[in-house]
Length: 56
Image (tube, rainbow, N blue to C red; front, top):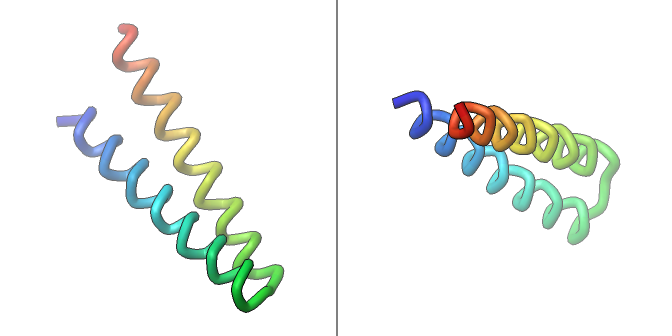
């Protein structure tokens, strides 16, 4: 169950990053870029945690 929650968390933040990055590219804005970067960091942390759990 932990694996599924981590995968869902990772996908949620990866998609939020893509949406914020597209908004920043289309409209502009440092706030959207900062939010996209924060979402990316969370997704990377979730991926690392998932890999660490998988390896044992």
